[in-house]
Image 1: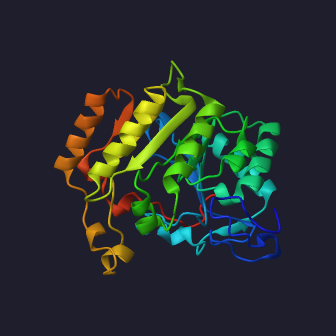
Image 2: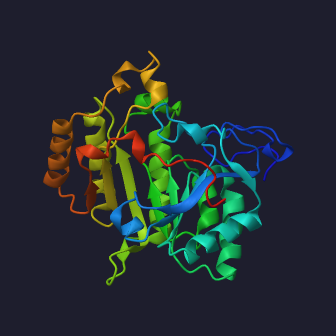
Length: 300
């Protein structure tokens, strides 16, 4: 870890190695809030036996509407070593995980790369998924080349004003574009197991539709299709759920409701009309707080 941390686009230059806290909410020690089989990812990730999902504490983006807000500030989680992280990967594989799914690991990217290498030397042979907000530096992502098989980034916005309003992230759009391009460069177009239908390598870009922002969602979908065609999958999500901290605040009244499903259906029609063939979509009943995992340090 550098004395002045510049791993993420914030480049806050905090000396996390000396125990100081970066924008991500963490020093350079690894904190994990949950490591377990997870059934709620896209079907080609979770399959029938689950994705071996490791939820890291802290986040360099910290969206105001985050469903995992309870760990985004590093308020929850157990401190572990690189060696223990590599053991967790093997334990999840032994439990039948289809893959190892690293959720919000960018602020630990140096340690994560080391842990993957150790685990691979000790028999890890399932795909590794890097599950990201899309707010990543290309230079940091290069550390994962040859180690990550599947990239699962968000593209949250196509409007930098929205990115600043909800994520305090100036320049998010260009950052996400560059990050996704680097991810695609590393792993290429999607490759599925013919027998199981599980994704072996490739890119799925997630987009969470926010209330009242369907026009921005159209721009995200249009950009991704124009740039990558059907070589990637999109995951167009209707699951936005107003969490307790949003409902109890007057700061973002527009986020206190779920999305309009008629608007969502029109958005899906738009995607089909422009030629999108490879996409996952959701039904209305997925917008529930009960889908948020219990961050109780299970498996850590």
